[in-house]
Image (cartoon, rainbow, N blue to C red):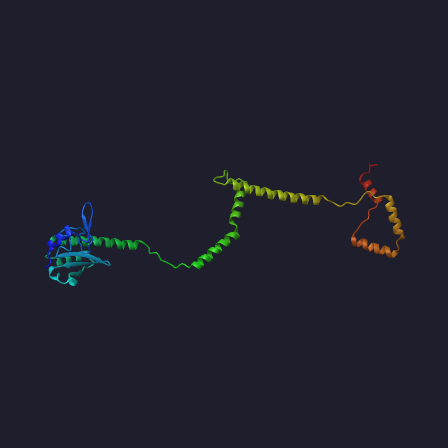
Length: 273
């Protein structure tokens, strides 16, 4: 036979696997405990007549244990499903525990109230929070996209473009002062720009020197040279003269004689002796 006082004496003074002691009081880890405290009235092992409330998947049940079913542990607890309406559930608890001690009725109602409150909070939290949709990740596609991005950045040369733009703004005076700008990088960029400008200046000087070079006919022609040329013209036959004229016309060569040059100079400077 089951004797409640003997069982409580063993549990209280000896060992109990459900007991959790602290400095202030002792707690009970048994799932059927109605208060969670380790005392004579709340212990589900030391009371042959016991009632409690349990929640399973959002549904509350009333569990009752009587001395008549103590001989069959498989049928020890009687389970009654409580309605979702709070008032109807309290009425059902009162009907089921009509002839039970007031302590058990009060504690069952109190536990049912707490369970109902945390179920309502759970429903509200589910409505507030948005569920995250998990999607599969394709590592091959991600790696390929990353390689393409790296190649595009290298091809774009964004750093050089930004550096040139900043240097141009600094030259124009867009920024009055330089804040948090590395001086070494700025000096290197300016040195590179100076080298480029020096090379451009050298190229321009060479081009200007080439432009200054001109080909001018020789003014110091001797009279003897002219006479020789006249003698040569007399020696030439008509056929040779025609050939020479054709070659001269092809090469577009013009002969300027000394007396023609002298006439031009006299016309330009009539007072020169």
